[in-house]
Length: 242
Image (cartoon, rainbow, N blue to C red; front, side, top):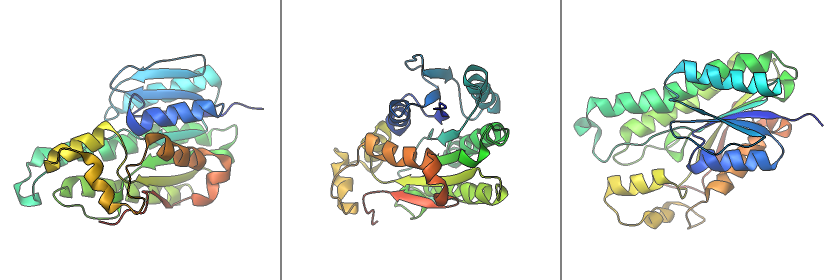
């Protein structure tokens, strides 16, 4: 059986790290990208760098192709969050950073990864997955810039899916709800609440999601069987209601 190869950004923590673990457990070879270093193995390589730098993503894709001869899936999971005030009080730098990391990072990942997927050997099984957010569908209180960025991720994926028409390569966005990550802790800090468990009141499951659960959804989107999700937003959010 041919080994499928995936690229995952934000690979050193949270949902990205869980996705690397899940894909590797399914037999994928994985190249992770993150600002921080991470463990490697025979089937997992890691590139340290910033997703705002296109050259970092080009290097990661080259690592996958040089080492394993192909790229079948790319998961753009790297992101940051900022906010805590109404739009008219938010500093311009907040919007700039969120667009640069959360949107440009996805753009750079797609721009680097998609040509390698189209080169084959099997474009019909290739998948691009961007991690959006419940904020990519809803407007969240005091998170206008973050909501704008995640809405942009959804739009980027839909545009990419349209560009990929009839190639076999597909694109999908996965929108998690409140997941047990450092970003959720940062969100709680922005809201001035001591425990992010309070966010579970917005999810019909009434609990915080685990990164491994979201990673399992992402892994399905990366699979050959996930092709029908092309151009869609998969709401892996436990029934989020703002």
